[in-house]
Image 1: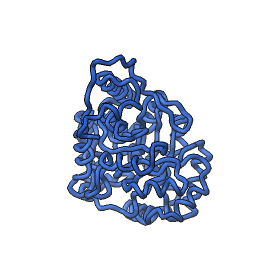
Image 2: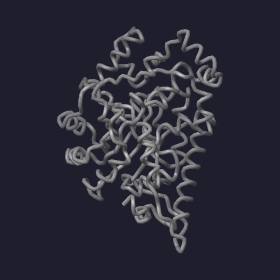
Image 3: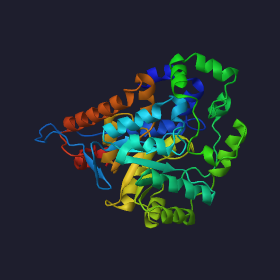
Image 4: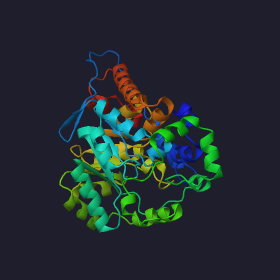
Length: 371
């Protein structure tokens, strides 16, 4: 789906979607490290038809994967955020909406249903933080995903070159890029120019695009210290999952502070090019926090086989971001549901090939070199 998607997304949005930071080594590392994980198939098996259902926070889900939070979805594929949320609900998987989505958390929740979660980029303004948490409560979200791996603005060369902004700055280069993607223009005409609907209510009025960018960099900065996390924990009475953790001791520390789960993640390779891959740290985090802790993961997953690899190395649940944008761009409205069906079929097929009947049995099929 990635190949045809490129022809439906303007370059300024495509580079943002597929790129990381620096030389993109971390983006490649996520995928390459995952492909090194091998299984040992066993064909003298009486395993039943594979059961890929799982349970999170008391909810039975049809598969062990869901939608990761993706910022600027409506810029990359106008209108896709609601389509993805609807597909997640129909497919009975988790959907996590980003603070930096271009559709408001209030609009998305009815489409995402009971398994719709909200990802919070904690602002350093306590009043804004409290209001965003209050909005999530009133909208009916039960799970808050607190992202901790954005302590300050990043410098991504491709975004600087392309003049990336939301709403788009329709200069000569941007207009030229968009003109080469008529499907994108048609969707833009249908759904309107994207805006940061979750954030704009808090910004000073009449800011230029440059000034709004400076506002974002200023308000979403600072480390999520123990004190900041405790403040969020005190305000939120539902479940909290901390996203963006790689260090095993830090994962244990957040759980001790009251987190209900962890997402092992390097932010899709977009924050620190020298960071380890998520799959490299996943077994270490699992060993540190124990079998009973909820450990989720994202980064580099592109198939049902990759989902099996993540589960075998210790993940309870896997989140995918970029693939849902690829599917939306390549196929249109039916894309997200098609992707969910493909991933489910690939996961079942992988387990059938190995003679594995349940998700819990997957670690036993790892090749000896990966144990």
